[in-house]
Image 1 (cartoon, rainbow over the protein chains, first blue to last red):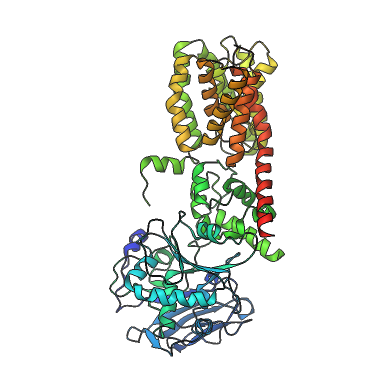
Image 2 (tube, each protein chain N blue to C red):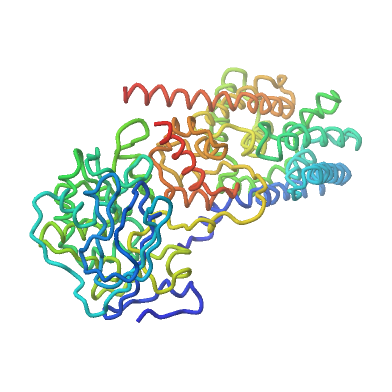
Length: 363
Length: 262
């Protein structure tokens, strides 16, 4: 069972057992860049692998049900755009479907609802169905307690086929990013990237910067394992949304996410930013405070970037200067440490998003 | 994540900037007061004026009082000559805090080191009141604070090292000033030149800034004379040139990247 804790902090150590399944929830805000069209209704029954929605402009890009169950809540916004789905999972239903082993990984991922695991840099959108990235970065960061590390311990055999499938999607290398000092794993033709830096922004800026041109994708390692299972034994298994079988390590719990606000519900595509709006910025009037240039700030951002000039450009919303200083390598989640260190109290993730949106609109 | 205490200090230094800088300056000020009890009045006036200006601006802008002028007040109390009158201290302190910080919106939004500005205004307005070197015991007492600031990054290491290079080069050309002057220069490097709000923010510009300040301080000082006034004006000159140095470094970055990527 999902144990309720009076203190949300304790929920970080909560364990699921496999016989109990929490509700699954999908917020469309976790899939930036997609306009989802959905023809189902609340109350409909769905089986694992059934289509729930597809992108309005790219119908090949589908979202499928990650579990068998019943839709208990379905919300649409402007233009009947899907905003939120909640699925009540059947306890006894199978948790995987067998498919034919896929020939073309691109078609397999699109058809089986795994395409939205990718994020494209610059700008952090779900890539288009015909996009070919210059490189793919696999995110296995976050220490031994992270969800990705736990998943790799549980199914190390799926890593190599998953990475091989990514290699077919990319026109360039696949970088397998691990924490500095992490050991070796069999990764086939992918390249290990174990340099310094706690964020994917560090790795992208060092190995394949997109600050001037080009585009790369990032993908969490749990998703790579799911992809590995899809292409190699030909099974669609969404159990990465829960604890892996036999694994007792806690998931990486994002503060303010499901554990507190929506106890008992697991997001199905997690917003990588780990912040719900309004969590970071304290309410009330902001008194401007200066940026104190300290070395800790430089370490919080990729070394290839000039940290303090970039933070200043973001603070005043100077999109052009921020672009020249390399902000296109970064996404919101890379700015968490800088926001924590900086004395100005700014939420640099939000400031960066504002600048990225403007740069994207200008083209 | 858990951090060892020194690492935590380094990580949170920016948030405790004012407290750390005051803590670093308190021992030398206390030692100077012990050596020259007459300086107590100047310290009291400088602190009062700094807080008073802060309070007035905080009221006008409806913002909380930050007390950031205190750092400049302590530096002024440490380096002002003993014969400075209270009225003269008041004028220098008020002008420096208002023109160096408050008109820009507070400390960190201006572009000069307020402590150096206060000393510069004092000696410009009242030419007989050039900054003096703190007594040697006060310089010794400043060592732990200097180490603290350097560790936290509130005094930029490249500035201090660059200043060492500048002093060495200028010393080779113009003659070695002697150890007492070198000690004053070292103090000035950490507490005046490496002011986090008065210098450049890119690494290369910091080295250049430090080297220029060090060389200028030595070259502007009269032969065998006091190095403190020259140091103050070298720092102020460096502060004014710092944004240009940063801009130049960023422009070179742009040129290099533009060349590589077409």
